[in-house]
Length: 364
Image 1 (cartoon, helix red, strand yellow):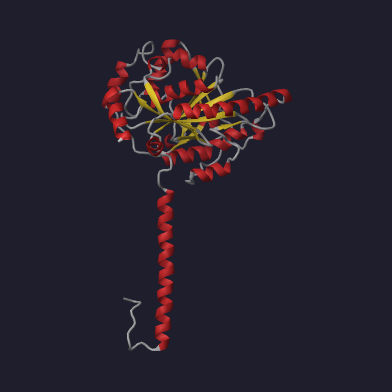
Image 2 (image 1 turned 30 degrees about the vertical axis):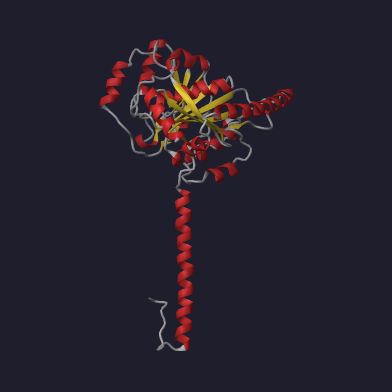
């Protein structure tokens, strides 16, 4: 209506109307561009369904393993070079930055990859020295892409400053069952171990960000290490003494002795409390990071099923270590993708009927 001219408009009015219309068009185009950009910005970039539909034979695992074999050969060449140098990585507290505010920018994966261009398949190792151990960071995941991006943005710089040789694994559970965080940790342990005999396995929830790079991502020899001493939402305290959630570091031997986590908690929480029972039962113990070094921020999210089924399962699994855990895993890997900043593994928990339905749907 604004751009409509009639015979009563004089020449100057017509020019003004044309200029106004051009301005409106340019402005509306800018608004549309912003809307498009914002929509794209918040879209899901990590969607295994797209990959599976493009590869309906579900043979990605063997293909990716072939590609990673050559990567491992190249890596082993790098490792031998480091060994020949004999320069051991050594970092002191004074060399680290200490406690920082959590960076809450939500970047695209491509932007994150540009920040850390020397990562491959989630692995980074310092180029100027030889780290004393090799660590797997296992992140249980499902539909929390923004949290994953925030975790990578904040965690990777701290790990690099610690002069750590690390590989990040994102372990995603396909949609056939309620989320089982304990089982995702168990699967992450098994799948990482297939790829390399790591010295230490750090299990880091996708919503838990350490605030201080002096909180070293490493395992203890005599004790397991819980890398959380205070949670921001609890005024940097712990809600109860036996808390083992958030971030914990375990050696292969410790994980095997505990038989990992219970596979029975298809609800929010509970598997960490069961892990505490396993520590007591197996006569292992854990050490906590020094008070201020172990401060963490937990990101807000909507919690799933809770309480009633959680406590029922807790009673049922109190003495389940001998038969429930890493030793009783049943799952099938449907996707392995070696992304620059992480190795992405998606699997089904084996429930025959649901798996068959999903495959039929995928192949249709």
